[in-house]
Length: 306
Ligand code: NCD
Image (cartoon, rainbow, N blue to C red):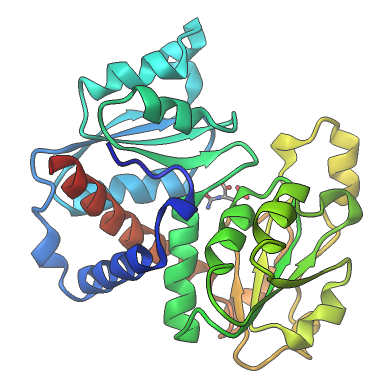
């Protein structure tokens, strides 16, 4: 049963295929409105979510399917001590596909081993978030027209920010990609991202603490929220949370075709004044996420039917 746990499980050809489907859905929504008739998505969210959960649910409805599920761990039998594996086996009896978000790294993977239906990782702890990356990739394709020869600045919480980890993996497969990793010392990208992805693929990257210094060379600026829920200590969060705040002034020496992205939710790291800048792409990114999730649900259900 093919699941999607890590973005690297999709080849670049499969990503192109998903983008093609998403673009076709945008142009011809009626063609897709009954594709998942009679199918059910189980939306199992053990952690808070607005965009990911609602876009998965909207995606399934727009494909003519239905949705069951829960939006907090406390309303499921997890609160009684049920394992993720048993939840996955149970839900396989009711639904055709699962989207699961969980605070523990690896939980959707464990679910995929026990489920008899495809499992989509909708974010596992500070680890991965492959469907956010699909949204990010369609945004990059639409805004920049290419996946090659781009200098990408990733700014904020690069340690716990799972969207960053998946995006680095996905983009490291294209040529001419450079990363500028902008974070406080304490929130640098984990070593495994360097030793397992950046170094073996010979990707050019530099680490910096200064957003201002990096700004002029960036084609894409990917801002992230400091992940409060992953900190052991609230005082550290308070000290680090406002390290980077993107304002219109800070964009004064940015490229005129810079693409500003953010997986959202935003807390303080992009001032609302930036929202009116034509380079702000983060709300388009939200919409693209729904279309990519539609394309992904279609692909996994088709493969499951084979
Ligand atoms: C992200 C996540 O959940 O990792 N949100 C999202 O899915 N769009 C980013 C975040 O929570 O900061």
